[in-house]
Structures are given as structure tokens and as C-alpha cells.
Image (cartoon, rainbow, N blue to C red; front, side):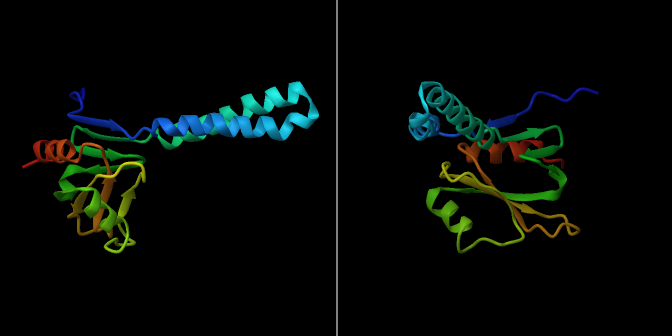
Length: 152
């Protein structure tokens, strides 16, 4: 059995400025190692930049997908049958649900550099998680994909 093409897939990539910061971390390492000579300085530049770039890349490699009968958000895989209503959150509402409205039992796939989000209720009575908070650049499209793929 083959799965159909994903109706929704998004990678929550890190902003471009983070790559500049990665280079600046390398420059900082190079300056720290400058008193030890040219070779250690170049090693610090390459090593510091590489380590910071790997960290930025891994943080920004998380994906949100709706595939078959499941929502896959980062490491979590949730059957669509266990999900309820999806609420699109603009930047102000998303901030509220990240802070004072947040429930500590909720599943948060949070990326601070993405201002909008989707809040999806969990309807499974066996699951203590009240809702999913998913940072997404396209919350309307994700909500639509959840509505069209949810089993009747």
C-alpha cells in the first residue's frame, strides 16, 4: 500500500540571519585563537562556523506533515481521528497561547521566529494532551489540510 502525496508539508527553516550569526560565531572563535597563530585561527573560523551552522540547521529542520491518516509534527505522530477543531492563530493570539493562555500539558512545536500558529484540539479521551500548538508560516493551509484529510 502506497501513501498518497502529502497534502501538506512544511519545513520550519531557521531565518537567514541565523546563518550570518553562524559565520560571526566562527569569526569570534578565530579571534579567540588568533594569539596561537594563523593555523589555529583558521581552524577556529572553520570549526566555529561549522558547529554553529549545524546547530542552526538542526533546529530549523523540523517538519510538519499531513500524510495519510496522520499528522506528523516533529517527532510526534498523531492520528487525524484523535484531532478536533483547528484554530488559526495570528501573531497576537499565537503569543497569548505561548504565554499566559498556555496549558503545561499541551504539545508545543514552537519556533519563536515564526509568528503565526495553529492550535488543534485533541479529542482522544485517553490522551492527557488538551491541544497541539504548531508554529507554522501557513496556518490556514495546514488547517485546510487537516479538515480535508480527517476521516468522516
